[in-house]
Amino acid sequence: MARKTASRLALRREAEAAESQDAPKAKKKRKATRKKATTTRRKAKATERKRLVWGVFSGSLKEEARFPYDQRKEAEEKLEKLLARGKKVYFIQPIKEVITAPAASDEEADTEEG
Image 1: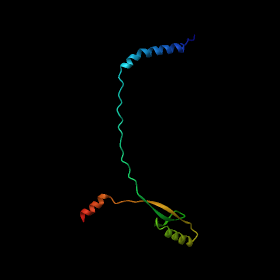
Image 2: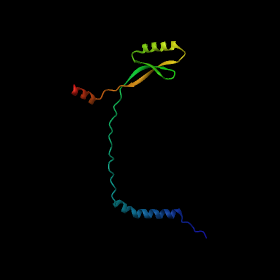
Image 3: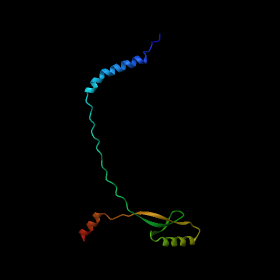
Image 4: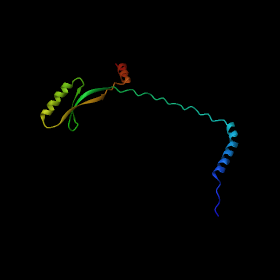
């Protein structure tokens, strides 16, 4: 024979009664205090200084010449000379170069020696 299952309403009442008996005990327990999360401070990265130069490139991306930013006319003249030579494709494109400064320790070593 199959057993009759208890009604959900009766099971719910039993669960609530058990919770109400455990409730006074739960109030007596002290909540665990959380420790503050320590934040790690990271050094901000120094921004890199860059400069813009004009590069004259061939169709196969080979760099043919490089000119400072204020010499665009010279770069265009070089482009015209290369285009006049033959059927190859050449173009001008700006290039961003990172400016590297000499390390301070190298400068100090030079002054101490001299």
